Image (tube, rainbow, N blue to C red; front, side, top):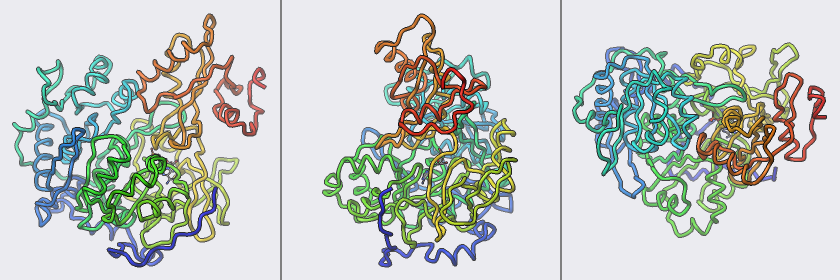
Length: 589
Ligand code: AMP
C-alpha cells in the first residue's frame, strides 16, 4: 500500500460536526439513549421504521420539506414532500390490506430507483410486512432464487423488468400471488396475473393507522452471498431504525438542512439503510437518481442539486478518478460538506484525490448486510488515515480475533496483528437470523463475538485496516457475488463439466468475476464455445454477476472431498504461492 500522510481534520467546519469528540461520545453513548431521539408509535404502541422515517415528520414542522427529489432517466424531476410520502405510503399499506396480505409476509421490489420503490418500501413497513429489495441488474436466476427463498407473496415491479425477468418464472414461484406493476407511459393493456399499481394506489385511502409494532418484528430481508449454497436472507427488525438514525447523524454527519445523495441502489443494503431509511429518519432531503454512473452527469447533479453530504463507493470514485479531475473542475461543488464511501476497500490515493478534485477527502466506512448499519467509520472531526476504515461507532465494540483449533476464538490485543474482524452483538440493526437457515446464523458466532468473515488489523491508535475476505465471495463494483451461484449457472450449459469462479483483481471494479471451466467429453475449447457460455451466463445471471472472463482447463483442482479449490485457482491466476495443497486431489498436484 502506498504511504499517505494523515489528513488532519479541518477545524474550520462550515457546520460543526455532530460527533466532535470521538472518545467522549463513545464514553457517553448508549443505545437506550439513542432510542430516545426517536418518537415511537403514538400511545406506546411500539416502534415502526416508517413512522420514524415519514409520519413523524409529516405531522410536524417538516411536513412540507422535500423528502425525495427523484431524477428520472429522461431528466424529469419529481419532488415528494414528507407529507406526500406519508400519504402515498399510507395508500400502499392500504393496498396490501385490501389484498389480504398480513403481518410478516414478504413484499419484494424489482423496480430500479423510482419513486414507487420508496412508497412501496415505506408502505410495506407500515403494514408490518417484510420488505425485500431486488437488484434490477440481476438476471432471472438470482431473482428466482431470492423470490423463492423469501417466499415472496407480493412483488412490485416495473413492467419491462417483470416481463424480462419474472413473467416466465411464475409457475416456479407458487407463493407469489400478487404482482403490482408500475406502468410506464404508452404501455397498453394489463399483463396476465398482474395488477396496475398506479390504479390501486389511486383507489386506496390515504389514511392508515400503523398497528402496534414490536421493535423485534421483522422489517427487512436482505439477501447476501456466501461461499457455498444459496444466498442468505439476513433478517432485520424495526428496532434497526435506532441505528440508522444514530449512524446517519454520527458517521454521515447528517444535519437537518442537508441535501443527501447516496448513490447505492436499494437492491443492496446500503441503498436501503442509507438510501431510504437513514436520511428520512434524519429528516433531510434525499436525491434519488434513476440513471447509472456517468462522471459528467454526476458532477452536474452534485452541483445542481446542491448536495451537501455524499455517500458513494470506491468503484465509482475510481471511475471519477479515471475521468480526471478536469471533468470535476467546471462544476461548482462548494455545497459539498462531507464525503463518505463504503462497500470495498478505498484506496488511500482515492481519499487524497477527493481533496484535490472535490475539495474534501473521502471518509471510508465499513459495514455489511448483516450489521444493517455502519459499524466502523472515519468521522468528520477525526483525523483520517487514508486506507483505514476508521474507528468503531459509539455503541459498537469491534475486535480482531483468531480462531483456535477447537473452533473457539480469542481476542488479539496487540496492535497490527491480522485476524478476523469481530463485533460484540447487541446493536439495534444487527441481523436477527438468516431466513430459514438457523444453523448458518449460528455459525456466525463464537465466544460471544459475531464473526464478520473479513480479515483486518487494528493499529496502536485503534484504527481498523481491511486486509481481505476470509471466504471466497467476490466483490465486483461493490456488489457481493457468491461463486456458487455463478458456478451453478455455468454448469447448466451442456458443454460444462465443472466450473470454479473467482474474483480477479481489477483496477476499477476491485474484482471481476472470472470462471474456470472444464468441458464434458465431446466438447473442445474454442472462442465460439467461450462466447456461447459467456452469453448463457449473462442471460441467466445478469450483467452484474456474470463472469467477464472464462478460461478452459482440462480439469479443476479439487480437494479430496471433491470440492473445487477456488483459492488455488486464484493463487495460480495471480502467480501467488499456492499455500497448503496437502488436501489437493492427487491428479492435480
Ligand atoms: P455487503 O454485505 O454486500 O454490504 O458486503 C459487505 C462486505 O463488503 C464486507 O464484509 C467487506 O468485505 C466489504 N466492505 C464493506 N465496506 C468496506 C470497506 N470500507 N473496506 C473494505 N471492505 C469493505
